[in-house]
Length: 365
Image 1 (cartoon, rainbow, N blue to C red):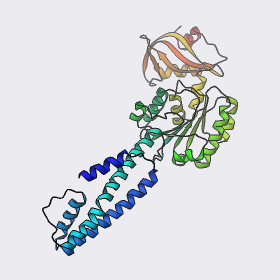
Image 2 (cartoon, rainbow, N blue to C red; image 1 turned 30 degrees about the vertical axis):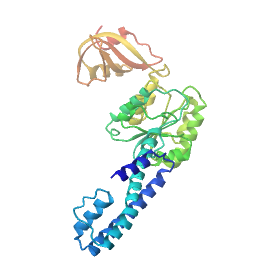
Image 3 (tube, rainbow, N blue to C red; image 1 turned 90 degrees about the vertical axis):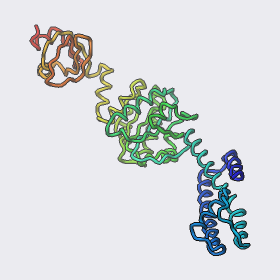
Image 4 (cartoon, one colour; image 1 turned 180 degrees about the vertical axis):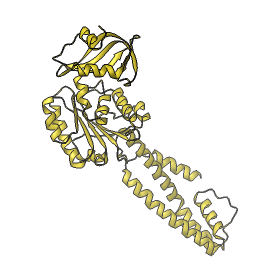
């Protein structure tokens, strides 16, 4: 036992200069060798010592592991010679080496997983390509991943980040969410293969620089390579310059969004309901539509009736109301009776309805 422990220490402390593939091959060959030695010695004990097969296996096992209970002695000269040659000289050291290879493999595997060099076995997963020059906070990834996990369709999907970040390992908050990563770039074929983009269901490509239109060229290159691997995945890309949107869509992007680092949930909304990204982006501009608040008191009014009357009057679409306790209620049930002090509606940019007009339409004035 002392021999094996000493060998374990030796092999565990040595630097893992061999590759994972070499260790797996060495472990396999050593295991096959040990099985052969084990079978030969067991056979020798049955033939030379006249032991039953069960006792022969017991003697072989306790000897090769250096436990040596001594309850079944080996008496014949040939039996002892075979034990010396097969186990003492040819078995115990190989067993220690095999154990050392196994521990080395585990060490290398853990190190590669930590540093983003491990190729994870995933499919039907979500790939986030984040080869960026920006500072993207951990919270951004956390919110993006959490939002995906709240969507029933994606709650059990593995999520892998292809990135040039996290060289010292993913933060614990992301590890707890089950996220893994791989160190690489989105325009390098071997890195795309490492994260198995061919088997991904969803792929997100973040802009290299959120405020640099030249980033769209890098995104185009990545997108072109992605479609060579995968024709069916839903691909969302960030587009810095709106002029490039059509170009990116022609290259294979299903969804294009502006980089909004403060609102990663928007990406999940766009993937879940393609087209919704345009509605959300319009909320931040005055091009085409705008959101307007109308201060008007309503009591016990059916929500569906309010929406219908304002739409019929060509005012716009009511999306929320503010109750008397200042709570904002978005998209309530149609038959819900509401008490409100204000309405929020999406109206055309050219329109400028007043509170009085809204009151007249709803019969409150």
